Length: 221
Ligand SMILES: O=C(CO)[C@@H](O)[C@H](O)COP(=O)(O)O
Image 1: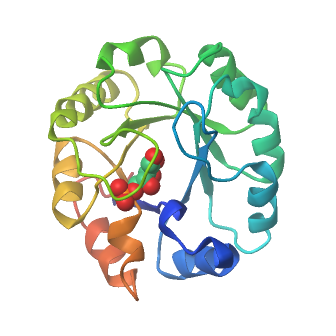
Image 2: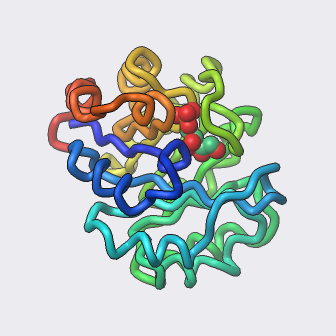
């Protein structure tokens, strides 16, 4: 069954705890937490202290997407705050492999991601070292952007690699995901859909989540 990870970037931050409870009660699998440093991306969100406070509200897995430079500096803080998986960008400054290794050393799942213009082969050196690949289908930094069609072959590339080497690899997509783009991504090989605006604009996101979960043949993943 396709996993759904609502992006909390689109929630009402003044009610973050309640919004997380809403996400959990709506049947979501993970809560996706977008951490932005104003350097790697031209936007700022929140860091580990906010996540630590939010952790008390729900048991839903926290999937942190670090849009920050030199992420190895902060992975321990995010692990201590209660994140279950941490994803870092290939394009970020610093030793990204060291960040991946440190995430694993801390007992968490490690993910790697890249923006649409980045060559898919920049993922190659990480593929057998991570639990999750996040294919960005918009440029990281803001919610509400238009889906980048040209990212579909990247999903197919990672899916083919996973079939040959690691069928348990989580293949996630993020940016401009809605009913239609989400279905196409699942058909291309994604098994996790991250979505902000398409879900949070709904008063009740549970029906939409249940519809999206039905996409794809991969019911056991
Ligand atoms: O990482 C990001 C943006 O940097 C995403 O998680 C967005 O928050 C997705 O928002 P929508 O495109 O679904 O509105």
